[in-house]
Image (cartoon, rainbow, N blue to C red; front, side, top):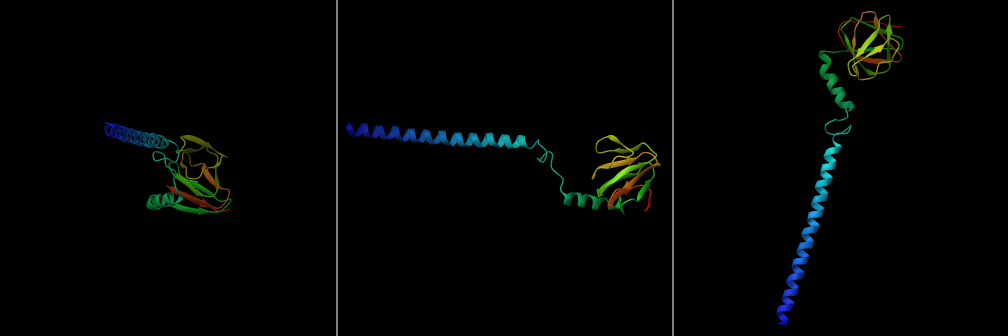
Length: 154
């Protein structure tokens, strides 16, 4: 009888250990799952899978692919770029502003007007609404253009 009680006690201990191990595994698995849900929710933030940051190499590649469609124009500080209406531009490097006697140009990236006198943001796409609108370089500039243009150096 004593032997039977000892075996019964060992079995109970075995089951307790097994239950504790199952509980620990469940807690770890639950924590990992909950952590996975949080990581998934983090993808909604800027730089996540659903809203990735754009690398310079990606932009270089995409602009290279558009080279048949867009023309690269390099111009120096003080030079102006006259464009026909409907032309589009993307400032790749340097600083430039909207000039001329027109109202400005449309920032297609933001969906708003950039009036004369304001700077153009890098990597934004702009459409020229009037021939009287020009772009003046505040520094050496690389710009990509679609449409007809003329460059006037300082």
